Image 1: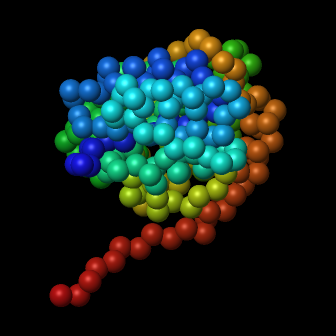
Image 2: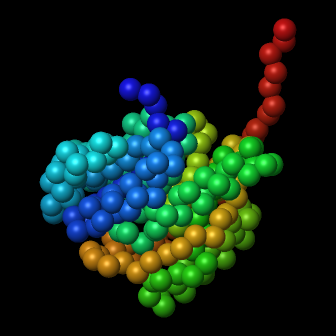
Length: 242
């Protein structure tokens, strides 16, 4: 089987009602445009998510399903999906349906623009957030603190829709919640990144797996750790003698 040009990785936990609509949207956005696969990673859901994915596999030939034996978190789900993916480029989406798969071709078009060949990460930027007021306020404050500490020149690192080179991603240090710091980590590795405005939608079904308090508590520790990684990182050009 020929390798796809693009792998769409979607981590999910208890999203049984969002699985089928989102898979259909991904197929509608990409089929006929590019050779692709969809890699869903079920983080040991307790509802009918895995059963829905099993049923969809018989209908959608591009769909692959990875299942965690125990709940391990979004960053681990993304990493395991990327490791299993066969495409050289990865697009990620949150499994709650708030990211619009129709934006994936937009990110691909940005990648293919002249002069963008050295960019390894195209990060979605939710210009108009469709979350609650408290969540938008908390994200704005967190983004301001993160930007000041990490100087990653990225207005929105929490957006789930991203496009990046698989090989570059797998070079990055892995830790829980690392998916929130991909631009800074890519830049630490010596790669360029670009933020691209994308759409954002209301969650139509299911419930959020995070709240402002637990985001803040883990965020403080993570920020200090990522800042340390950046300070201790070193990128050196190498060449092999003929």
